[in-house]
Image (tube, rainbow, N blue to C red; front, side):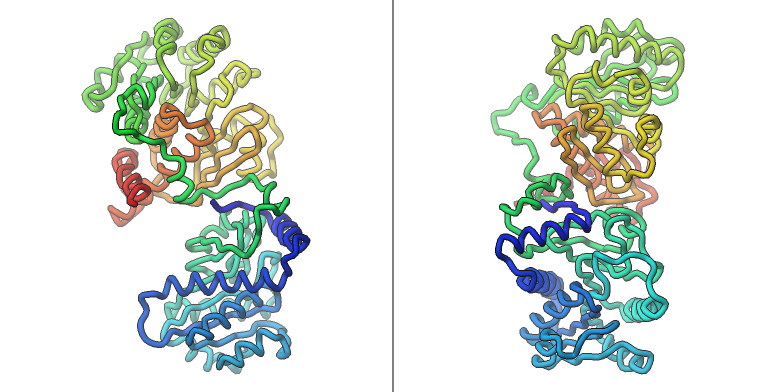
Length: 524
């Protein structure tokens, strides 16, 4: 599974590998070979003479681009090296590609006409102008050159393969120059650079692939990386087994508690999410209004009617909730509760119950979502009263509110989520573009998906249900957060593909199309 690293960490990893006996030259050769392999795979269906143009800067990325060009030229591709800035003609890699019949051209105003002709026929373009060490701003000369070549590539519909990062991107902060390249595929060396999963850079990376450059498992710097990027292989490895002799009790009893007069549908969306990922039994504890209005929508659920005041759960319902909790494996708490005096008393009584019954309910796994999350986290030392490894699922606005006094100003999403997880001894699922899952022990996983399809009311309720459903099937809190968020994001993408847009997707589409995601992950 891919790892997520800073530029400084990348340098440390490579140096540690050199200390283990692998030369920098070998790492570069491996990197170039990896880029060539990605281009080769993407061009398997192409017919006729294959063309490739390497955009070569003066740094290490330019070297990687030349190695990739050399490897493809050796296989018969028609190649050109287009040099940006100063690179010595005595460079062994320049000599190597020339020796294989590649043309080497220094970018200049005078050469623009011939460069336009080189781009005819939609060659693969290897972007190696700038590397991971780039910092804004671009020089005026290079900005002009990159802006022109980027325009020609777009006009002639060439496919761009960026080496480690699109040129012009800050690989730590995600900042990028206006003239930064737009990649169709970004080929990352060993690990993904953290800036590529931040905006605006994330909009320029295209598909991200990682390639092996020879970093070994005994590399101490590599071993110390605990930040992961979720891919399909990771999700597949986490899927709970479903033996043929299964029964519903093996897949978890999930209790949903939430809903109010204004947000009747929230708890049923929790229930749909839990059932969609394989939960055995879902019980929904809510107001009479929600029961009467929605029980026919989810006939598979068992319902627990709780007392309410004018449509909002009140403290009298805690005793009924208590009696049901001892029979449950998972509690999803808070979706659609509404925030007012009545629900505040209900939540305060719930937190008191959790503290008083800590030993009896020690095995209960909890997901805190939405209004319930905001009210609980406003209480002093709330995390000491909840079971260990409780999962919280804030969206960015909720996260800012609940961490306002933690001094996280200036910290990015990943670092903020990790700090909160450690401070509160809980698993944080920080929703939004590139959802982050952080555990108290310092591990993190980032979902490399950003989709407007999921920017819709109710999708967060479905996610909380999915996470709870996986908890009920025996996953740890971190695993359930990763798998739930990953499946949820992929279901959003599937929905967008089916409807051919990302505007009209509803929360119901997300849980409905979860089955296609499972089919894809389990197709072999």
